[in-house]
Image 1 (tube, rainbow, N blue to C red):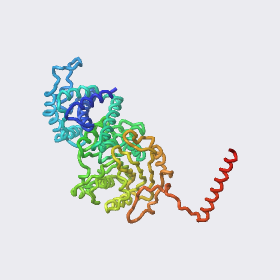
Image 2 (image 1 turned 180 degrees about the vertical axis):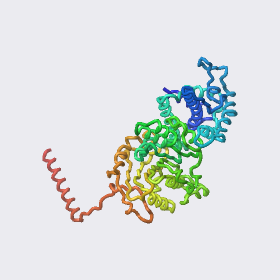
Image 3 (image 1 turned 30 degrees about the vertical axis):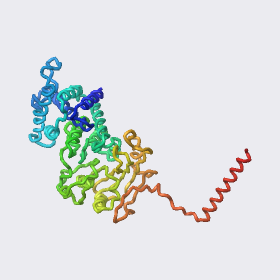
Image 4 (image 1 turned 90 degrees about the vertical axis):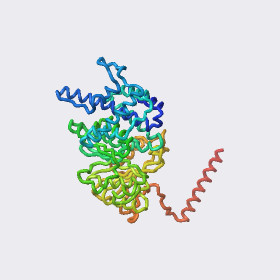
Length: 484
């Protein structure tokens, strides 16, 4: 129902000189979508309060509400074109009044987990990139056709928004950092299996794919009571995101999936000294695909016992510290982590193996992440017990992966089935941790099923077998000749 509206929005944005990529389309449509969602959300709350004879106080002052500046309607429900801001007047209002007002909420909010703070955070660093006020008017008109009221509407909008995020991942540049293939995320969550009542955390939120899929998994795992649903929506999912674009997209994605007040903060996770993480800060589940290949500054490295400029290694230290004892983690990392011989890599493998049970390593094929040829693995571990055995699974899709041939859920079915009991197969095996090199702690993926067995035959036996095969060949060709 809303698919054409989304397409129309992108077509309109394409015409504006301020937008040039899928990243711009997602960013600019997101802040407008957010304000329309907020208007529908507030109306729903107002109706509920009225039915319960309670007073309702809207978050936004009257003049900044959607119905006062975006789409002004008469009492009969028709648009009042005489009061509708157009062209330069609309752009001036948005740039000089609306954005400054909304950004001020960050300083006025009582705490990080309030809707007011989210509004302030989103609009503090974001700006309206649309150069033409008439283009802005056209986008607003299209967005007004969307409704965030019924669960069916929200489901369709969330699916369309996911597609937009996926297109960002395919757009090149740094778009891929916002999109982890959903089939992979779902498979990781099925193995970790978060339960209602457990807290789920992603310190590198991006588009919040892990958190929204965990919400879907947990909400469908059982018949929820009203209290359990409220717990899922308000006290289950936490995260942090450094970049402004990813922050607003992550917030919007969670809202569309039914998490109305996402507990995501806008900050660099690595700015926190991990020694300051206390028991109250720890979580049950961590699901993440942290950025890798980055070069962190010395002052950031000082927050971690194992000094390294590799971003992913710092995140891994943070995740180990952030987990409760008994907590579980599924994290994507470059496969070179398993075998690098530098001091930081070895020290981090040592910490992981001693403090956690690294129970599974999923080896992903090249092309699993569109737009990059980087080979990655997924580490699954539980904090509190040392590692004794690791179950490896080498994913083999039997085809080259790419934009038009991406990873799908069927590719991962065998892995999920075998992972439950850690069964051995042509693509999976168990490694006894006592058999690895004690100095290097090399955990590289080496499928023993593919290692050729040493030929134990003597030279005389080999010659005899060759002579026997030669004799059989002669008999075969003679029988063919006799038939002719």
